[in-house]
Image (tube, rainbow, N blue to C red; front, side):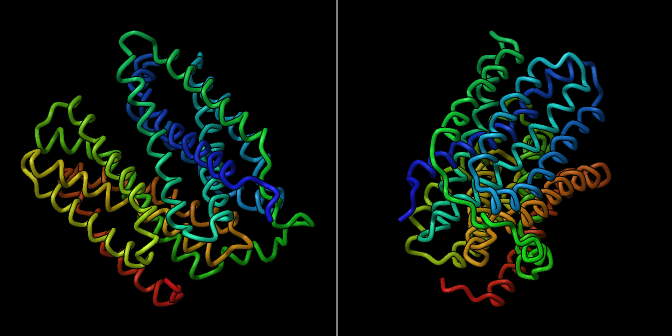
Length: 386
């Protein structure tokens, strides 16, 4: 019998994923205020995302060997405190350079927490691993929605520095939880077998799963980053309304992940994955063919629903295949995924300059076709029990 409380561990993981949702949303939420405060141009503003993503990439690489060797407690507690300190740094930054350092550190800590919480839930969920990981992903959506909602409703009464500083203080709650409870023991307390861990970077099946997440991360960042602009430019919606309508994408993803916790008790992971690709494809095509909100908004909602299962179920497959090195395996695929998240929105932006945003976004359904075919090939290769 484990010496830890699985319910408390799962709650702590959900709190960690909530932190990651906040990390992912914080820069986008404060960017207009940051541009005004420091008088930076759009190029400098875009570089802030790159700096944060580089930190996230590094955090995603290093967390795996650390949790496999030393366990989850120290990493999660340290990174939660680092997120708190970095968000306070974002709030009170007197210069752009301090802001850059804060964003790099918050990205590093957020990337480590994202990988660590997913690997942790995978480790404690021998049954219905996909459902538990889907429920964990709900809390990412809550955190990602919470920050812009808070600023959107209160920015007329409080400064963005005060609001972001308040959000940072809230991070101390999960920090206290991480320090107070007992976590599972490290998998390799006698020393991490580095050679075996490095073999994972050459494991073909793992790298193929990473390629699926490379494409999926790119699609999620593209749809989350460009959909509001698409509604504004192509459907002629006011910018403020288009940002509000973008919430349908995230709400579809959140509620679909809640539903998945029950669906996966009765339906195979493979069937859910292939259905998800089909739903996302239908949603994106509806959105791109739309000339009015009546077709665009259902398309946006369906896209979020279709995207919901991909990350949690790939994590579930990887957790099943590599249980002794789950942290390292998750780190490998997350690092690959982040490269896609950095690449796809940039490519769409370049294409949009020459062909228009509507045409450039057809990269999304084309990628979904490639992803579904690749996953079908992976499934044939591993033939999971269902």
